[in-house]
Image (cartoon, rainbow, N blue to C red; front, top):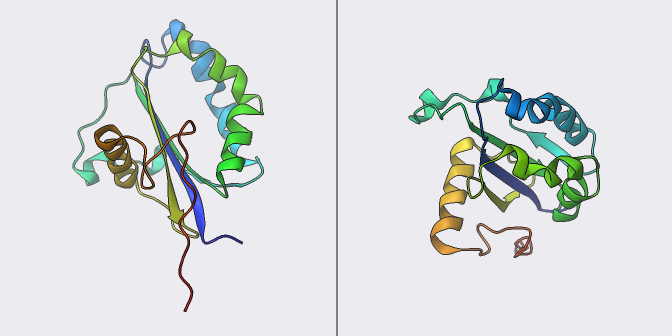
Length: 153
């Protein structure tokens, strides 16, 4: 048991709104990828569309081309396993077909075990990564940082 789990948020802009034939293969695979994540080793939680209330957060609704994912994993290795060592990789390799180049952002950060981050947390971490670059509070797969260590009395 660890004191921290890994949270991730990914925001991307589709080349066309959901329902458009240009992104039909991607949207057809969303449920499959979510189900794969749900049963992957080390998976803890993911944000579901029905749990997002942008108005309550004071955030204007995003354009229909914008999508986001947010999840919590037991470790960096667990998330990496899902992203790069499962069927998810097939979709990742095709991202240029479905997403606007430069229209994506992903951030990783550590949360205390048992804590579920909010959408606002994720957006703040994305902003922090954009403003300061990778660091212990917001980082990427390319530049990961270890989980904090709690000092024990």
